[in-house]
Structure formats: C-alpha cells, structure tokens
Length: 399
Image (cartoon, rainbow, N blue to C red; front, side, top):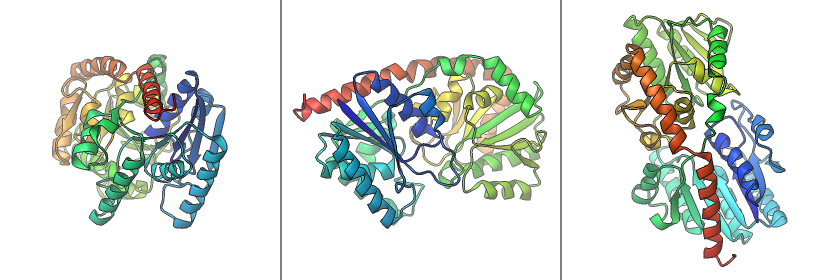
C-alpha cells in the first residue's frame, strides 16, 4: 500500500517532529511511504537530522512549496505535486499543514487518489489574519473538508472547534489521534543533559531557569513572556534566568522590548551570565529541557504544542495560556498551571507559585512524565493512523 505524506516544510517544529517518526514507523507496517516537503523560510532551521534518526527511503523536496502566499510559486508547486502523485500513484495522500493541505488535497483530488486525509496540527482561523482573510480561510477549509476522506484532529478540543465552531466537516469525518512520543528518548542521560546545559550558561544550582520554546511570530506571543520577565525582574525576584529558544521574524522586536525595559540580554553564548538568553534553534531540545526548571507558553492560538509534551516527558512543570488544545496537553493543577488571560501579572503569579516551591516543581514534573508517557504514545498514534487508513480504503471499496 502506497502512502504519500505532504508537509509544509521540514524544519524544527512540532509538525516535523511528529510526522517524520510517524512516517518511519508506518513504513514498518507494510506501507510504502513517500515524504514530500516544501522549502523553509530564512528564519527557520532545517530538521534534516530527523531523517537520519528516522530513515525514510523516499523523500523529495518541492522547491516552489513555501509557507508564504505567492500565486506563481503556488501554481508551480501544484503542478509539481500533481505530477508526482500521478507518477507515484499513492493509495493515500495525507497532508500536514495549511498550505500543503490546500495544494496537496486539490492535486490529490484532481489526480483521482482514493483516500485523501489531512491533519490539523493547529489552525489559522484566528490570531493570524484580519477577519476578512480569516473568513476566506474558513470557507476554503470547509471546501477542502468536503473533498477529504478523513480529517485528523490532535485533541478533543480541536475536534470540537473544527466541528462545532468553524464547521469544517461533520463529526463522523473528523478523528482524534493524539500526537505520539518516544519517552525513552527524553529520559536517558537526563543528569548529563542538565549539567551540560547549565554549564554552558553558567547556571548555578540555586538559579531557576525558565524557558519558552517556539518560532518568534505574532501567534506565539513571546511579547507577553518578555513583559512577564520585565515584571518579575522589576519586583526583584532573585535567582531567575530566562531563555527564549527558537528564532523568527519578531526576535529583533523582542530584543528591543527587553532593551527598552533596561534588561540585559544575550545571543546564544556571547554573554552566558545575562539574565535573558536567546539560544536560537537547538537540534537536541532534550538538553535544553533538562537544563530548565519551568517551561512557559504564551500563545494566542495552539493545536497540541509538542514543546509542552516534551517538557513533561523531561519532568518539567508548565505554565501556559489556556488557548486551543493546550488544556488537552497537560493535567491542570497536576502537571502544570493554566493562565486564563493574557495579563503579565496573572502569568507571573502562576510562575511564582512554582518558583517559590521546589517541592511543587518536583511533584508536577514527576506527574508530568507519567501523564505524557501514558497519553501521548507513539505506538498508539501509529496503530490508530494505520487503522484510519484501512477504514478509509474499505469505505472507498479499495480493500
């Protein structure tokens, strides 16, 4: 059985970190797997290391497939993908991400593919564009939903949004398959990882390291994190260090925001004693997570943030804005704390609960590892995806 996975791009981020291992393990389940991906943006970091860790025989890049809208390149990408589908003749095309979901599903429909599936790793119905563009996006997704055989939501909350709020497709067409994880990859060598990270940034054991991970773009709302940093430093909170892990178009803006607040920051290792560090992209996120004490998330909109799953697997407590599927990613009050506003004061208050209580950090961290291991199983994700494909093929009379 031939399967074609189409990704927006192969870069460090939740989509790639989930789909490449999934494709690798599906290849062990009697699927001939093809992975096709688009070109990255200048501020993004390739995740080609995933292909070494999770080998896939058939991988191809579509150079005209890009995140930004460009009518000429989008048409060329459509033609490339259509021709590739006609050449490979896959039984199933499974798209991941908004742009690949649009172009890929249209090409698959035109090429007569039996089963067309799409995973919403997040959505762009709000907090990305103005109201008019958001409406156009919703109408387009409703049409794409009508030509899809199946749609995968990665959390119950997301399914409710797709069916009840935005009416993208009827409930029977949308299947909840949580992200998968490989716990052993996060547990091993934890003390070595922690010591290495903290040595790199001159962190003493009595300093509490708080980090936020992700692309520096408006929807991730790191500006709120910077406000929280400024508030906590103004209030004289002792022994705190803050880390912004990732990169993106808003990094210069965030750095100016810190400078205007009189806060010293540094890029990577050029001043490891600075209270705020921008690490840029990091291939081995486990070392960062083990080195941190608390992981934060300030997003305006999320699907199922992989950074929070990984943080819990590394026994780190969470403080996060209560948006999208975040509530399905942690156990509120047990493995992390949710903030029901975008107030710096409210966010800082939740952080202070953890800062002031080492025992609470330890307890939440231990519960987080158990919770994430049980809820986000790679084996279950692979088996549920495989079963979905078989059910769809039966529905189409192809089995």
